[in-house]
Length: 355
Picture (cartoon, rainbow, N blue to C red):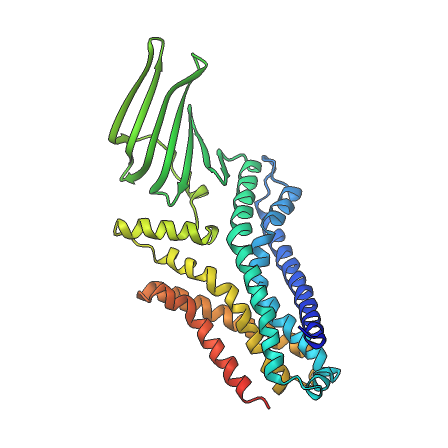
């Protein structure tokens, strides 16, 4: 990388980072104001805890805002260079527009890889920690961690590996506490459980009962447990597609397909794990012709306004296509990639017209 390319990277990267931080802090403030409505005097969830909850969820805010920060930041960075005639000087030194765009896209590729890592590893863990913290402060009988979910139901303690919905859980262990004996009277381990009507059907279970005479072990292919979980408790801890990493989504999709069950929402979120980071490249493709072809003489305020309009348009189109695709049976892959392809085509067309 030569000196001009490093200088270009530095200016664009600084503008992107400043914009990213500003956008994320703004949305974090909105989240905090919204959380103040959940504070309750009879619990430990006050204003300070609401602030901590928002901070724990900050990786999600950073991840969501990243493509739009790249768009606005690149418009600012390249626009400032164009406004001070530095782009003209670079072209006079032999750096063509195509070379400038290619150099910018190389930076975008590195940023996309960073965004993918953020969404794949940090975001799911931080959201689980944030939700667990909030439920503890609200004194809910639920605790979540990377190893699973703990629930309390009367004299039962339950550990669940994965809560897919209010009707299906995987990997469950139930500990029955006997207050009179002061210990565990029964342990039930099962591969999973499904809710049918008003009862839970446990699959492939092993039951251990502890008595004064010893331990008895019984195995069941299926076992009915009407009072396994309290009503609506799983709505608190049910997994949402956006909280899962790509490999977890792939595992769930495989399970759903093997059992002839619907998985479109999870498939859509799976592909978004890849299209969201790639959208940073699309934003850079859109920014280049706006700076070189149309925005050479405009101010910073106009560039920010244009960036916001494009970002909102992309966000709305992405959500409309996603929801419409789910309703009308459009392939999740097409729903996830169509906005990406459409805006890439628009950007490349505009870039081709730049001289």
